[in-house]
Image 1 (cartoon, protein in one colour):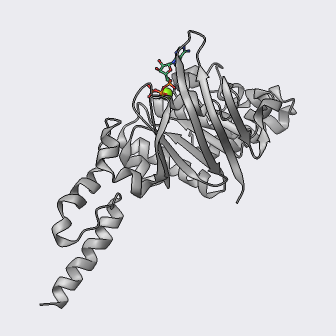
Image 2 (cartoon, helix red, strand yellow; image 1 turned 30 degrees about the vertical axis):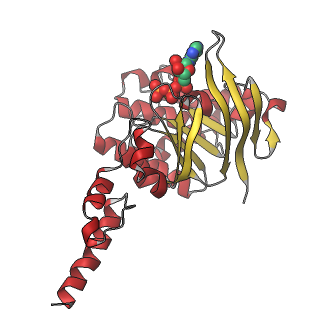
Image 3 (cartoon, rainbow, N blue to C red; image 1 turned 180 degrees about the horizontal axis):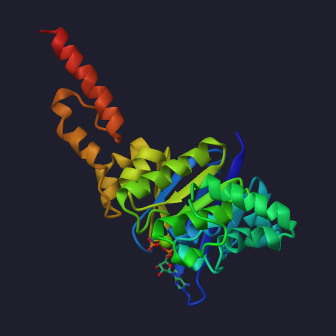
Length: 279
Ligand SMILES: Nc1ncnc2c1ncn2[C@@H]1O[C@H](COP(=O)(O)OP(=O)(O)OP(=O)(O)O)[C@@H](O)[C@H]1O
Ligand SMILES: [Mg+2]
């Protein structure tokens, strides 16, 4: 298994003296889908910005595909690890889709016909029904998130970091966006998803990391972490609704670590069939 990202004891102190990370050890393998959770200000954005050199640790090391990242520039690291900003408006600054999504490629010196081809492919990939001359600033929040993702995807990074990509989207749009992210993961990219949404994390990620006050307080399978009511409470989170139901139904032997609706359906179908048989 290839290790995509590894951090060793990273600490980060902002210029004003605030210590946002207090010793983080994490290892993420290629192909994983990891959710990073934790309450506001726990250090999620600060941590993931270390994965591609947008921030450099005050102490400790970050390895990207086995290489000490301090040997590389942020521009070099961004080609391997793409970070989609928490707020798409902090990322979008061009007045046409072509200029916006093509910016990184042009910076890297790609020929204009190649830029055009790749930008078109990226727009298609994120399923954005807009033309190359449309102004991203006038697009809806959901569309702007897709523009932000496309402008990173176009650089074909191996790891994609999405910092709360569903902020401001209604549930249906959030699900659609997550389906897109799932597809990107299935095509082989490693996904690091920062999210506050336990239901989305349960449905899409296989592993959950929880940060609190700049430290990791949990790192394990989504099933284990997202069904641990006491642990989640430390970060003001509650388990997914379906897990709350599962726990209330423990008298009929519903497993207490069910976190997805489909798992519950599967269990209940078996349960109903067994009850019919025993009659
Ligand atoms: N530029 C900065 N200067 C000083 N302190 C900062 C700066 N940016 C963030 N912080 C502080 O570092 C801590 C961690 O911030 P960070 O943005 O990583 O949190 P987060 O977990 O991503 O929060 P949110 O869920 O609100 O996005 C917070 O207490 C924040 O106030
Ligand atoms: Mg953040």
